[in-house]
Amino acid sequence: MSNPAVIDLLGVLAFGELVAFERTANDAKFAPGVSEKITLGRMASNEYRHYEAVSARIIELGADPIAAMEPFVEPLNQFHNTMKPSNWLEGLLKAYVGDGITADFYREISVYLDPQTATLVNEVLGDIGIAEFAVDHIKQAIANDPKNAGKLALWGRRLMGEMISQASLVAKTRPALAGLFLNPPAGVEVDIDNMSTLVSRLTVGHSRRMDALGLAA
Amino acid sequence: MSNPAVIDLLGVLAFGELVAFERTANDAKFAPGVSEKITLGRMASNEYRHYEAVSARIIELGADPIAAMEPFVEPLNQFHNTMKPSNWLEGLLKAYVGDGITADFYREISVYLDPQTATLVNEVLGDIGIAEFAVDHIKQAIANDPKNAGKLALWGRRLMGEMISQASLVAKTRPALAGLFLNPPAGVEVDIDNMSTLVSRLTVGHSRRMDALGLAA
Image 1 (tube, rainbow over the protein chains, first blue to last red):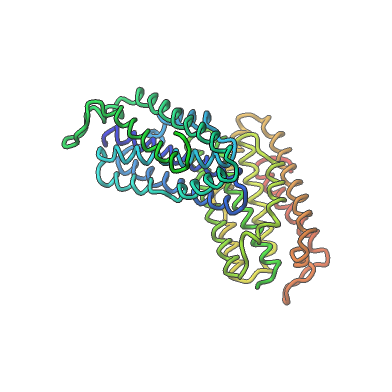
Image 2: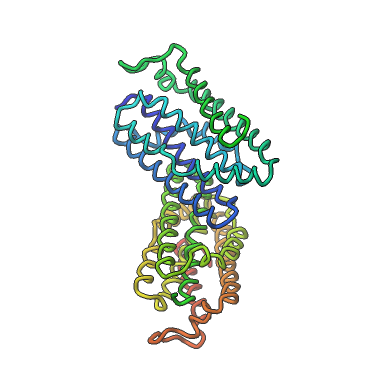
């Protein structure tokens, strides 16, 4: 059996992709036209394939994917139910911001993963084209109607706040996961206050993405 | 440019698969557990792949997929908006009944298609496992609570009625499609009242599927 913290990390990633698939497909109902619906469908299908790849890796590592995902079902559902987009732009911003923070998080913790798992995680979190698509559409919408900027900036802040809040709850209930940062594997150097440094760095990444849209983080 | 009726048939099939993908993924929110969510995700991803295959065939035949789908966007959206499942069992029955009627319809009209298109349509409409999954879950739910039977039988009748009603509207606005039955290609024999025969045969297939569930059609 592998390091339980690694199984936790793969479990949350697998369930995250499964829920992302569901939400992206659901946001297709907001698509202004058939062509945007097709793009969202392609992204959602990719997210489902990612789920399958991570699930297969959990099995290879000797664990059960359903059991590995179970601790994260509640917090991720909580996040998605609290942050239900009410229109096309909110859906796009949520996907862009959520994917960005998730990718940054896994990049930060990839030093704790075995090389094969790290490669897989890297592939799964490679941009599936949503960033460019979202940025283009959001910028265009703000150019068409500057009032969109304020509403989206607020939505972006709420997304980031809710992600940090759910992640803190998860960290409290998963000691192995939290312990990863306090008891790193041999050869990995970490700060004493590694977790708060991590949050700061994730916040910087988030601000950078909001800046790219011309939105206040 | 191909026969416009064939492009119509592929257009409605392509958009049907795209919307089926969206609705299946959306029904995943009703899934009683993570394992059923995974099954619905796999089905939805298959439906998206089917959309891609039909869309590619439309391009091969020299037409534009978006233009080919356009006449069917409104009636299919209308059908899905009128028949929104309100729970897990209604979602399963809708997928089972809808896939069944669609497959029967394309089997009936496959004589009008060139062999390559007919093979593709056959592949796309091959059962992706939803029938067995739906039948198992619905039968179990009725065994657990016989009150489910009456509600589901009613839902099944409404689904069939709404499909026939939307299909009639489509037939009226797409003369090439309706004409297929009146002016069949050389070598294909048809009854004078082929369209009403078709509806009768589809109704028989629907009754057979409802019977398999122990439900009155």
